[in-house]
Image (cartoon, rainbow, N blue to C red):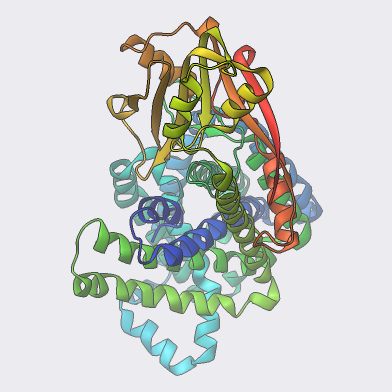
Length: 547
């Protein structure tokens, strides 16, 4: 199944499957981590394999492959801030041409040895596996790149939708790939010496340089798919509470799916360049590639089993009958690729472990922090009548509107308590604002708000966003103001609580995990930027919390 799908299933399942929530959460973390590792490996492998065609054009350029690959990759990541639309407009037609050329080359060489058409008979594959035993498993791991090349189109499914991808796949991509692989096979049957590089040797020498240039352009598109897929996955992980807030920039005025995360872009660039310089060739890096993709495939299928049962209400027997054959094939491929752990395969395993630990630490630390602060919090419905009571110690009433952001609408926000404690004031109108991410991609503007009048001076507002939407509070409040909630933005202040976290060995996490969580919290984007609050209307009040 598609390797970008774990994040979608993860978002849709983890909030609704109580009995298996911990298991699904772990699967989602592993799948997301594997995909992030793949987002580093795919650009490095794709670009290097294309540029290596220069060695056939001019053997003297062997030493230039590495620096050219590095320059192309740096340029690719440098233009991410301009938006994926720029890449799509420039390279989209080239990609279509690329598939046409691949299919045509395959058709020409199929007639080198028409026995290759027998490859459609699955009996030969089964016979090979039965006769060769362990060698057959090793070969499965080696040929897995053909599978990953075929399904990479789905890595950015969320940006294009199902229908365009289905049309592109069945009318162009799948036929072109099938014809090309058949042509390569026929070429090798007729000319065994072509086994060293059957793809580029399909073309006459005069066409090699244009083909290398075209292949490089096409691999940039393949790389773009996983890069933008990584941006989408990280944004969803942030909204679901698995990663700290990061700066999210929108690169299109019409397509909300086109986003840019500077921190993720930098991390991917550093990882990709390290892989290129560390492995130095696509053949060496290919050993590391299969594990991340097959692992994500297995995770996706396991989560799809829960999805079709819980969301589509499939009977368990139907779900097993449909997905078990697919899972069996994927497990075989995963096992074949795991044999390469010692020979570079440890890289995606290490990457996935690091990303999983980061996300698990943030999730666990946030839960511990919430529990600790909840113990000392004051219930909001108890606090309001107490603070509004007339007395000599009542805070001074000041004009204007104060909006207090909080993650828990049941308790009085810490910023509200600190404002009364230190400034001894209470605004004429006070809004307790909570922001919720629901387990669906988008929430319509009509379902965005829940407004509850708590008293004459206090109002509770809940803003609801889908996990693929930007949490733009200013925009949402502007719409709310047009629909009856009156306030003047120039006399409104946004109050945020800022916590200074202090590690505690007794917190429930090991001290190293405490420090990691605190480091992630300190690196998080400022909430006023993340929620698009007016910068000159934000007030922050701090406190110390031992975690």
